[in-house]
Amino acid sequence: MNAEGLIEVVLPGKVEPEGLEIRHGAVPAAGPGQVVIRMEATGVSFAEQQMRRGRYYDQPAFPFVPGYDVVGTVLATGEGVDPDLVGTRVAALLKVGGWASHVRVDAADVVEVPDGVGAAQAETLVVNGITAWQMLHRKARVRAGQTVLVHGANGGVGSVLVQLARAAGAKVIGTASARHHDALRERGVTPVDYRDEDIAARVRELAPGGVDAVFDHVGGRGLVDSWRLLAPGGTLVSYGSASTRDNEGSKQWPVLELLGRVWLWNALPNRRRAYFFNVWAGRALARNRFRARLRADLTQVFTALQRGDVTARIAAQLPLGRAAEALRLAESGTVVGKVVLTP
Image (tube, rainbow, N blue to C red; front, side, top):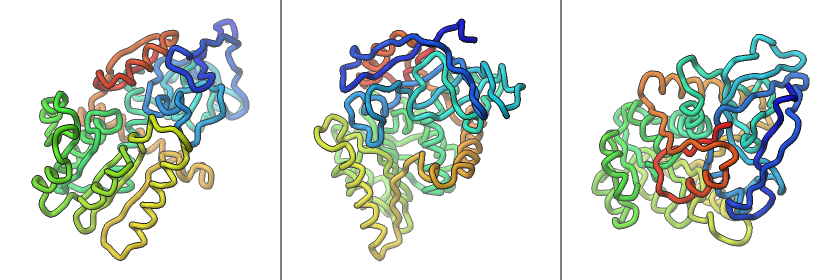
């Protein structure tokens, strides 16, 4: 196995994409309870864009290998792991470490990818699909006939969210720039131009009684508008602070501010609820429950893909050695879908 050789992309510090480094080494061995995955696809998500700026609130110390998720084939198993897993295509949520030709993970953290689903297809739906599914069904508990507002409806998570919400029978209003509106309409989404329109006023026209759920990755001052747009009984799910990506100063403060707002709103006597969604919540305290929930939810997402409820939107596929170009492309805002890295 070690004859293959390990290739990984290293983020050495706060650098431009071209500052990423390529490192070579020995393929890791699978320890007890672990598997080694030969990477077939990994992705460029918003998290990596924040991490290279030092802005992701709980990123590790530099240097490290980024890569929030990975899809690949099990190359080796460690002690206590079923050896029949070798040759199986699996997906894993990592937070860091995915931008490598070989990735070692706990066997309990991998989810089998269904037959007929390609590696790049599956990759687009790992972190984005898990996030969208859990926010929609575990937090907001959206039901048929309800109306939801999705900010960044053309983005990585947003594009999956609108499709899952439509599959659940909800009416969807989505914010995006005008060039994405035709694509959103084709998916049954009512688009709102976040650049040229008064978003709150336009949403109130479309949903005079308020919306049943808002999914907000932007944070900042606009989060107050998101809260105010809720109907009685509605739910706000905040899951990011994209508006602060290029800010200086503390990377923790934007998240602490969001948590403070959520706590305050929930303390008020009203019939609305607010959540700050973190896909890793509960992992430290209830690891087995976290894993079971992740496995069940990602399986649901893959099933939705097979049914045609969700499509895999691949913006571009580039080899691992061109990670800098892939990151630059993802940050450009000119592509639709996920930028995928391959071996």
